[in-house]
Amino acid sequence: MGPEQGAISVMAFGLLFGAVGGTVLFKTHWLRRRGARACGTVVRLARSSGEGGTSYHPVVQYRTGNGRTMEVRSSLGRSRTSLRPGTPVTVLYDPAKPQRMAIDGYSGGGSMVAFCVFGAVIFVIGMRILLSTVG
Image: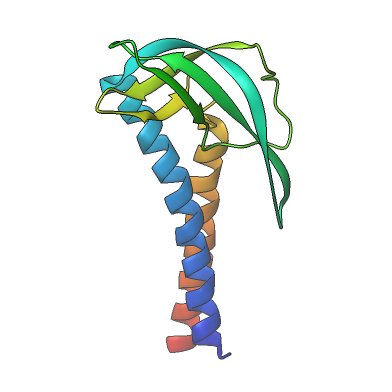
């Protein structure tokens, strides 16, 4: 792999981090502004394992405004979580697609901002490497 290809790979890695952070931040922001709120309860923790280790995703049960009972796994998993089965939570959900939800206060706001910043820094490093090989 040449230096240009390596720089492009670094830039792609940065974009990936930025995209993940940005997507979660956008979804949470959208749900806060336009979504509905419901009282929910964590019913279990779904375990997922990967290269980065084991994550636990809260599975939340809540009732929508039209009375439909939902049981949805949070898309955000953590290696450690304070949420346990039986924990009451506030759920933000899309009334048109009630399975699209976020747990209020569990959106990973700070860590998602860090993902965006880290992605931007990595992208800039890749860009500088690319520009130094071209010039």
